[in-house]
Image (tube, rainbow, N blue to C red; front, top):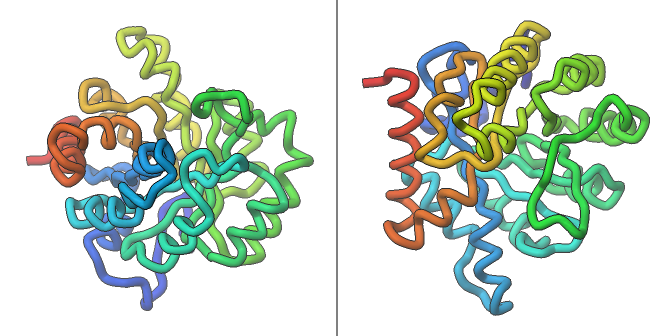
Length: 270
């Protein structure tokens, strides 16, 4: 499913949706894909251990509003997304499903059974509130290699969530993944710092030069997304908490459309 130089191609049986058209574009084109992470819809539900709000219904509304894909993180402690949610998302998402998960045998087995379009391996600690940093793929190469081999053997596209650090990016290329997702947390915490956005620009350019697709995400909002969206080598953003937070006031479809407009404005789409 991955073409030369990190660009993506699709089999003829992939559903012809707006998402497919978006995925066929060049990573350096005006179009940037928006994947919505529905984890925190489940966070609200789990506060009462009830059946609403439903993250799968949220995914449907996000797709209707123009999301190019849906992201969900099945954490080991099941603090938000549950196994049943992932089962339903795998069946019902009409764009593409990006499953975020820790590098464990349990999670790899779940992915191989459900066959999401993409798995993004992320670091995970029980005591953290949310993901605090990128994978250290340099130190964890031996742990990552078997999982990546299994996922690749199952026909699942792989991505690694990493810092925009040269050593991490080069080792990711050595591991043979199709994509990297650059951790934008430091930028989100200090968006006025030239160093944080410069690191993302350099990392995106290097990742693309090395033949990988480049994604980005963590802590992005309508207020801070523009400089990241303006980086031509980044072809996809994963955004969740800000969308769900905004949806409390305006609804999830409007929140998706607001983010899409902010991204497009940064790419000078009229």
